Image (tube, rainbow, N blue to C red; front, side):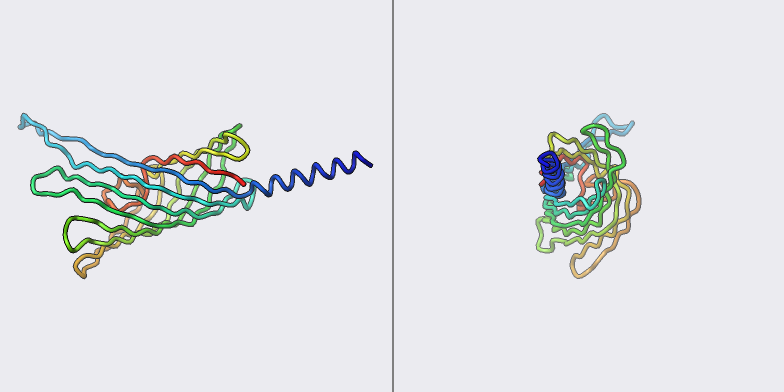
Length: 214
């Protein structure tokens, strides 16, 4: 009888433990940097190319609906600095805020490492501080899928690594300035990355995060 009680208690404890760790909360830090120069064959000097520095914070919450399937939401807050490096041009600073529902599925689990596919629908807003009274506002929305690598440090802590450059998706970007709205459409790899030609993108070339399971 005692063995049966202990066995039932062990099953109950295991079930509670699994249920207690079916959710997670955490965040990631993303950054992107581009710089360089170019030189023509008939010139003896190099010309500096524009540089871009982008940093973003992504609080995240998720729930395991199945052992390999997670649904959740992700917020975002970030900025980027664009330096055209040309005479008469000023440095431009963009401020961004957004949110994204997501689903991710574990394709492969090997020990403490997991390989996931993550899909999301990001929506975010950008204000460009270009030093004038007519700062343009950009609204971006899209759909993307990208790979995600995880490493379990313990039963309750997990590291995450991803890159929006490796994501494939579609995005619509609308910029309003001086009562005029210009709409752009993008399809392909990296359309949600800060390395795109559009400075208002809310993705990051490299994202490193940590989450706590509870």
